[in-house]
Length: 469
Length: 140
Image 1 (tube, one colour):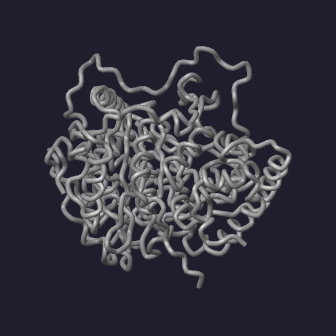
Image 2 (cartoon, chains in turn green, blue; image 1 turned 90 degrees about the horizontal axis):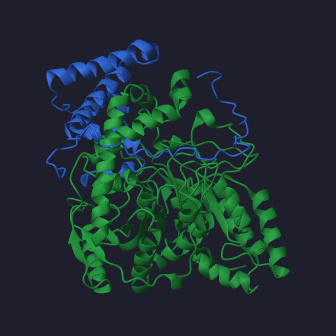
């Protein structure tokens, strides 16, 4: 029986052992399944486990590797998929009661890509209902209840890829797939002390994934390091005829090895990403910023453009979500959702005008040009992923004093890639994340910067203690 | 906290935005990081609301019109508390709309459409297989 540490090894390290036949994919899958069965419920991490699929894929992987057919770094590696990705023949609930019995007869493209490289699906990760597409006030807005943070189970993992964050942080799988419309990969990665990549919009096919706001939805990996994210991204990226939002063939594919990271990056610190830091985040952020200055000599400061970006992003998501969930709104089944806000917001989302939506798209175009100009001078913009650590499980989000998130609005309006990695801990031992954001299509710059940071730090190697009791 | 443009996003604005974005926790206040929420023990819809944004008479009328449209179409499904909640959220939404409309754009500014023309259609267009959807409404 492997020791505890195997559950926190990187994909790269597990792959080395599997390729050299020192580690059996079947044995690895068994121990991850056992651990997921034991601890998954503690964190409300899974929507469901799929042991039959997992063992079938693990046995196939082992057989192939024994025969000398090694498919690459994800071959035999156990993972979890957010429960908005269709997997043929099993429930795909979108985290919402009205869809609890929904079963698709095809796989999402991402699921097929991972199957083709030999990855082993352990189960479906829990999530916020409809990925927040009809709003939510509480972390409990999920079929599985609130996802508990492995660093402190009285705290939330953040949403909407809430289960994906818990699974990776608790060592229940080697990696997970999350999605982001606005913050849903970056925030759980930060709160859970893991590495998460939000790829450039259109780089990963959404075919078979629940649509929330089709002009902003993105799928990406959540794992133990920037390098792991790069290897997973390489497996799932690429043009897909079934998703018209994907970029062309020549711009979609992504291949990775650390040797491709040869650029001297021009890195800038975002001076206006957050107004202030709370909950003990300030100290680790200051330390991390000092480290970044040493690692990226010549790091300058730059300000994000000022404008109604959050208003534009909100309106786009509102209007597109109203279209995505029209049948739910019209049928009255909104009331079957868990969260009090989710039960009503869709009605209002339907009321916004096409002219206002078009104005938001115009503002989006203007913003994209402004960001293009910034990326002429810099390759990577860096700032804390969030100005706070994980929040209490039962926090009523409506009672919180709001603060702006221009970084998230801009990054998602413009479809920019970003990678969040751990950069320190608060005195209460809650992780803080640092976000590396690059120009559209330049995912490798964000990856290289984050990986360089991780070569000089070891925050990503820390993991929570999961008590056996 | 103040926005860069000097505006203050209210608590309700947070909730509204939390609805649309998927990173709801990113807007919580420092003092609430460590204490339990009163709303965890009280029904959230009964939580007294702070005052809403100041709207011009025109914006107020537009917001009311939007709310009435919801009530006309869906009012029978909504409790009084939910109606009150929706009105408050709509006011925040109106303030956001006003800010968005105030941003100068020209007639020739193109919208950031992501849709690409179908230059070459597949011979057999990809059609998702029918989902077995127990909870799906028959019509939409």
